[in-house]
Amino acid sequence: MVNKSWRIAMACSIALAFMSCENQKFNDTFVDSERVHVDTLSTELQKVRDYVPQYAVVAHRGSTYWTPEETEAAYRWAREMGADYLEADLQVSKDGVILALHDTDLKRTTNIEDVFGERFPEKTRRKYYELLGYNSQKIDSLILADKAAFVPNYPCSYTYYELMLLDAGSWFNQDAASLEQARTGFTTNHQYISTLQDLIMYSKGYKLDRYTTNTQTSGHVEIWGNEANNERVVISMTKTNDVINNPVNFGVKDNVIRYKFGYVKDEKGINNQALSGNLPGIYIEFKEPWLNPSNFEQMVYDELQMKNVEADFPGEKFNMNIIAGGNEPESNPFYKDGKINVGNTNGKVILQTFSLQSLTRVCDLFDGQVPMCFLLWLGTGATDLTYDDPQGYASFINLGVKYKAHYIGPCISGAPNNYPELNYPWQHNLIHRAKMKNHPYSFDTYDQMAKYFGQYNWGSDGGSRYEAPYLDAFFTNHTDMSLQYMVDFGYRKSPAPTEIPDAREVLDNLGYEK
Image 1: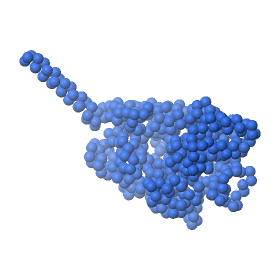
Image 2: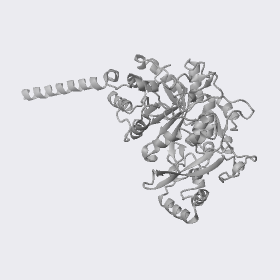
Image 3: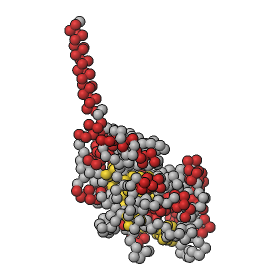
Image 4: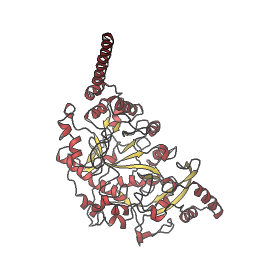
């Protein structure tokens, strides 16, 4: 009996000792994070990493707070406020137009339920095919195929001709979360689902050309409303020989249509007041591959060159692809004469994705020569970060290094989004050990700015063993608040703009009346 008791006691002691060792090994995060292995970027990749200004302000979807997201209003406002980058998610229409659009369901940010409901848009589809020059027999066969493949509310089930019917601004005025920021100008100035081409033109200081009673419309595409509804100018639609696989309906092939839109220089506000002259870059996200055609990365690569637009603006340079003729002199500054000049540097485009599959595709095509961010989300999805301990976090950093990303983009905690915390000081330190930089998302409050810049909390509690700020650039829904914070605390200095305009006054001056 004594012998048996002794053996039990010894077994318990060994188990407790083992548990103690395990706790020491895995629960002291700071110790473990400093000894875990991370791979490091090559010297060549570090050079590309530094194409982007330190503490760059990325206007998340333009703004989700002051304006309807990813619309002309959002991007013009962010540009005029002084954001370094205009951020967008990328999807594709049925006819191959690259969209700046977040949701895979059009119901939240458009009036698609009122315009189309759940039904196939046969009337407008027929008109679309007529405009492209198809005969009636061909149109009938195309309509039958399109009906069979139709999935309501998915962007890739609609042509851009049909998507232009939708209002992407009025919902903002009706949403309970944004009623205080509602403006009739978001309705009277028809807000469209933006295209990647639109995004680039906004970053270059342009806006949509809109029909007026003086517009010469001879030969233009027939659209709904023209000047009465403040519609955008659509000069032509041309069928190309390019074909894409529809991402929702496997096996369906759609022809790519080239739209020619009108744009005008965005130089004066409503009181003839000069606009900023800022030229920000763009920060564009590849979604999960199933949402887009298999050659989507190549489509984006080609679209960034803006060949079809440059031909219409002799002497202007719109090419954003720095490895396909759009490169800039290395001496070009990020800021010039108190204005944003990022759009004239080799950091004018940053690519991003959450998807490991997209990361590898981008690596194959862009080969680490264009700045790239690997975004992190804590979850159970196929490419989510499952374990946020040092070993798990380091494994994703190593994937980023392997596939030639230059930045890690972790989510941050705090209201109103209450995301999981993936940007602790030790995690920021791991990113830096890999010679990468840290681009967390998304900032909404002064408290978040103060926390991750080390003003309090992590400036003295736990984070004191690492040097603040715990970021190198960041996504914000409040460009105005974030810029003012950085000016106040000395992170934003001349030659960058240091006079931050009032958010409401900017919207007033841009013509979005209250």
